[in-house]
Length: 273
Length: 293
Image (cartoon, rainbow over all chains, first blue to last red; front, side):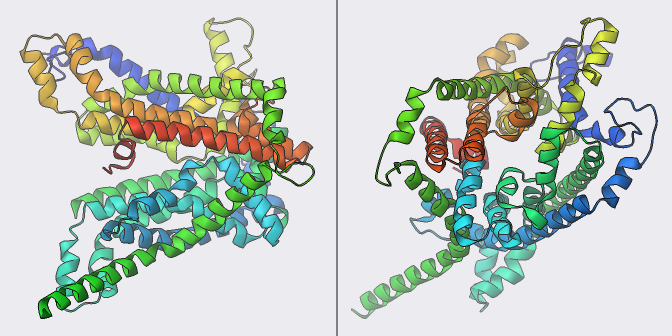
């Protein structure tokens, strides 16, 4: 019996009669992945124009990027803001997720809804709102201002990821530790945190990426010496197409792929333990 | 009596402990308050501020008077609906395909959905700009194959915007839909087959209705997120596709009119919240989104 005539599902439909589905799924997956990966070969092109496949290969756009003060400075800002956002959002979000998970207070649901508003409110409103408020407080174009705004955007993600981690963990273990004399915080750090560490690390990576990739808030509240990579990229995309962006995009794609594989790996480990 | 006193004391202690745990949310609340609540209240206030500094509805009345506003609302709605429909058309078969695979293989193929999900929106918008341009890969390929003779205008217009937005939104539909499909009891299909339904009938009578809540939840997320889109229409629309967010920015850049921009923002927010509220009333949106119930 060949693979084609073998049943594929419980309804006994054969793989052969399902070929159209496999073909369609393949096309859709290609459509999803190609635009993400196409920037890689393009970044090694020698041409001023965006041709594909490139007729000549070179590293000139990487040289351009690495040699440009503007792009280097913006990269430093983005990395700095991303790391700081991660350092702010991860502990704050983890604390909140833990409290909301453990507490039986009647306000927990309302607080949860309040804390995920940054995910619900259209980003343009957060952008112009903080721009206006920061204008009054002299916080526009500062690293601290941008970090605070990005931390707010990252908080819902951290809370959701850590809550999912807490769900698959047996809270009774913490009770045991406490009945043996550990304080609540000691029980948390010694018993709970090590067991939800993969969720917390995933949340941290996500909050870094949220900040690093964020465009709209950065367009409004970052600027001058503290403009982010995405702000410069957006300006470049709207006005003219600079192939340097292909090189920068490639680096960003590699960064997100590495982080994605890392979280998949952590996720697999998290479920096995 | 002693035990009653003890009990109240215990209850008080319990309450104190609950509050002390709950106080852990305070730092997060402060951040959300500073970035969301205070600025939003400010915008809300500005939107009702007239030229003379008193309360006025003129910023909202403007929207009903000018045709340009009307066009922007229509465009925003149109783009969001069409993007959602494209996402359903492409997302449903893929989610179905993934949900039928053994979990290990599904995890591998799922990377095709997660990779774009994790890649910067700006990078993907840029990639589409390159793919869709006049002398881009898609035009060249289609002309080589004889699909069309002259390069089609695929970007800096509605077509480009829809392609780019559908690509960005697709994972938001597939992920909740896939989760819903995975939860469908396989015995159901088995039973349908046993009772004599052919595979097509079994799909439409059993599988599809059971997958509907996941599909509706995913579509709603896509629709609501589309309403607030800014970057993709700005870059791929080439100034021809003006959605609410783009108009808000334009008002601030050109006229510096905070009242008008805020009023438009308030309308966008109300529309978003209304959609979610309706969704939450009819479906267990939390459950579909976060696995909460």
